[in-house]
Image 1 (cartoon, rainbow, N blue to C red):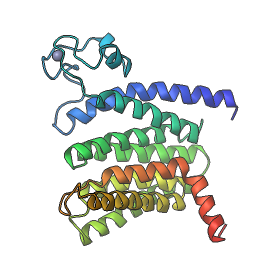
Image 2 (image 1 turned 90 degrees about the vertical axis):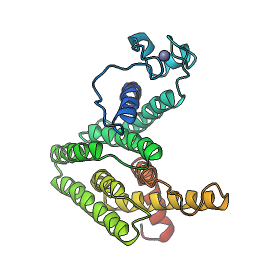
Image 3 (image 1 turned 30 degrees about the horizontal axis):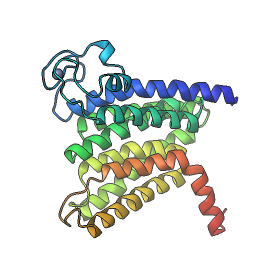
Length: 265
Ligand SMILES: [Zn+2]
């Protein structure tokens, strides 16, 4: 692919990420509360003043308003622009990594969903079925279509098998240790298994390995620092998401380095 083509694509993905990041804030706030994500229009949680379009520009409005509601001065949490920036950064990285290809829409959805589910899991210690149930089949359809469009039915099949295998592995772990992992994590595993399986079994293994490594290291560090008691639940969803994104974005060089170091390559 031409370099200018890549730059344009990454820029478009970043702008799309800002807009979808704004929508992510709506989903993160409303879905766990069981509220509609389309109605009513956004309003200030403190004074209920409707948010005008010019005050609803991702990141910029927050900066211009100095993080306060125009009507009542309520402090808008910095998490709103941070989620928008994270969404823009993630979608730009995905566009850079995947490029113009039939699977690009699937991986933009993949990254956006993992961001949203991670924040909700950190907030509420659960991963809502209201998101995994509709988005998992959508991802499956996008990936199967991409595999077929790319002339590789095997890749489409591997995506589906990846979803089943990841689901089965985490279900087994959840049955062995119900306190360590919830069924929300198991359903999330089906979602990320689709995206990782499409890229290859090595990516699926790497994604799950990275999730347990990152989650385990942080849990040990928090215990050592006595920031958390042994019985406090540390959500696992964000680590599954982080491991998966590492595998998608850095899988090729990491797997090549591993094969080279072990003499398997
Ligand atoms: Zn207000």
